[in-house]
Length: 221
Image (cartoon, rainbow, N blue to C red; front, side, top):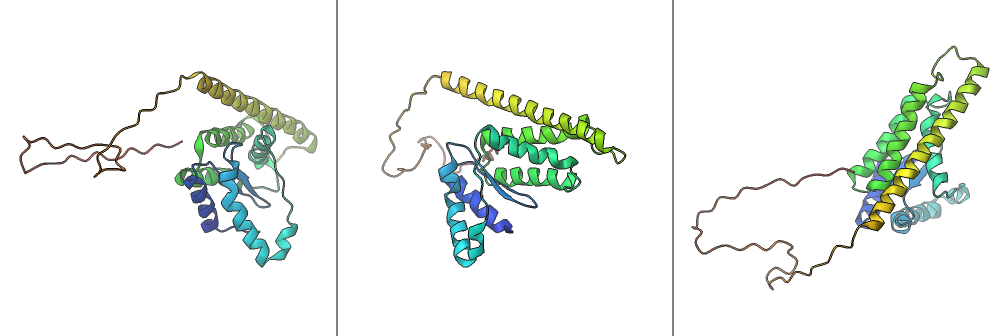
């Protein structure tokens, strides 16, 4: 089943509106949705509605195989895609571009989030290390040597998975130790009920006023 760019952007925008993280990865054979345990209900609500509409119009889609993975299994699945750049059935450029495109689309729609950002950075590390630390791109590689190199690919995937898990665990540990910030409720005048910045004009300011506008800063995960 092919998914249009408009459909992907719609899913990402809907997830972002809910404050949820989501990455849509389209490979040659699959459509995969990556989110977090905390965000999954909000992130996938629009996806499920869209898929249900497609099944009503094309009943054969109801037979499509679906698999749900979580935790290390989902991360290992993504890293497996990154490691497939050595596979004869997959173009190295196509695999790398698919990963970068999926993360970039999510970031552009403010739906990437810190957890998925670090996950896809780790996947990029897998692709880089497979290219640099193995000889699988060699055209003269024998079948027996290829099998040995594939063991190295498995080692790279497990090392990057362990590193990513350790980093996420450390982030959660530090976050849990941070003191709760006090919440101050601001009181606003009736004329500015939705304002978060109160502007006051002094009586000594002359009628002719010059304004300096500071552009908003963009932040990327």
